[in-house]
Length: 261
Length: 259
Ligand SMILES: Nc1ncnc2c1ncn2[C@@H]1O[C@H](COP(=O)(O)OP(=O)(O)OP(=O)(O)O)[C@@H](O)[C@H]1O
Ligand SMILES: [Mg+2]
Image 1 (cartoon, chains in turn green, red):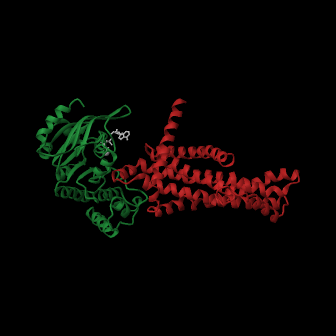
Image 2: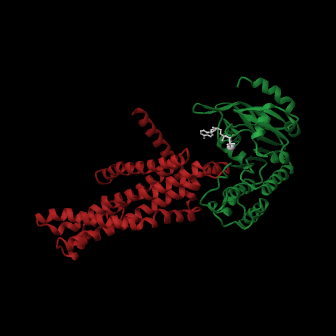
Image 3: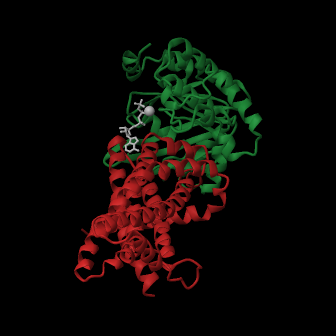
């Protein structure tokens, strides 16, 4: 919190590139376990930032701070200029309408079928006609390569299928800021590649900003503009995609040594 | 000791808040009527047979216990009065409340608890879906309707069960039994053109239904930490619902009959 004046200075050159998400010295602990430990991070408008890092380092926790599901213990998270620690419920709801979030475990409502899950945000928050809603739902399910499963319940789907339904639900409101928590975990290489391509295509549309958590280099290669390596709640390496991939940073080499491609 | 007292107070506050939030959203119950109907089926229709069975035996026990004593005094013809009053005032609402706490309440806590630990509640929040409106309201309305209706069933079958015992074991004529039973419930209420003992019982069960829904929803929504947390939430929901039913029953009785 003491670094305020410094951040004002830092934001001055960034004004030419519009900052959408900013983490300033964010710490978060659960009980005695420190998960985020003075995290600093910026995401600029229109870019795709990929977050990599070993399991349990706080990648999902970071993403949850962006959408206001968690609040920092200290430090500050700002999204579109809103301080997420102090944002009022109304503003938060407004902000979230322009955000899409793919949960690591998809988080489909277990007693709604695929159609109702994907249609949920439109039915609850818009006056859209049922016909149009259904059209959109089918279009989004086509996009994630899942036609003809409208009437299936989440429990009847494989993990990878649930993930893609979750993606369709996250995209249904056509958000401007999209957060993907491991979009291609549990998918076969072919579908995984097409989901990567989908994320890239979405981002190419005007002004879409995304943050993607992944363990896969194939995903980094397809979707990233910038990459950060997170470890023990801190950024240990950050760079443009090509710089990052070419880096000989010992932690990166060690991390990629355990990576699966 | 102090800590658990404070926890209880905090929980009570949370539950009151949830009740308030649900009541404020009552107008959208009509929009959610399909979900209310689903919940009525799960929470109400599916436990009808349990209520019938327990109500039947409760009536039979009442008739037998009181009948043996009344027979000593030569007053068997009062059995109908006693069974009808006991069922309508106390046993019907109480039995139905306990059964619903153990069935619908635990199911509800487990359902919302599972949603909580698998990020489904977080997903609703992220999608800006109002969780009280979407989850709590339909369940609350369904239980507030189901509990009084099931109580009526319980009362009826209890009185019938008492009649069986009275005629078969205590040689009271069925006709006399039902005549006294019906007469016992004639006492009119002050405000409502219904026999007081009937509507007092129904009012009680209406309150029980609301208590079960709010306590169980609250327990489920605050479940943390995987399947274990869901189990804890379920246990807590049933325990607290039963406590709430018994405690509120005393105060309702006092309010309805003494005030
Ligand atoms: N709600 C919570 N309560 C308690 N601890 C939590 C909570 N959420 C996360 N944690 C802890 O925070 C740490 C980081 O979790 P997080 O889910 O962010 O890891 P991750 O980097 O996403 O890992 P993975 O690659 O396995 O998904 C873990 O040790 C986890 O146990
Ligand atoms: Mg994670």
